[in-house]
Image (cartoon, rainbow, N blue to C red; front, side, top):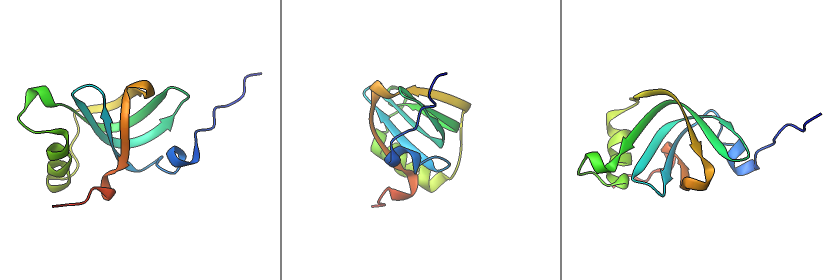
Length: 96
């Protein structure tokens, strides 16, 4: 019988919250954290943004997302944890 994966508490507390995921690629993901696996994050209602397609930096795009409100271009997305640079709650972004 396989043991069910239990995510670390700092990730488990983000489940069900809107988060911003920065990666080592030009992509930024903004969506609701649904699940955490041993090597992935699963997000729902996700705004996947490739910064190569715009003039916005990832930081600028995250600030724009707060101003514009919820929008998404994917119903669900899975992100490989080895590609993740940072994760934060959307509400924790300090506006300037």
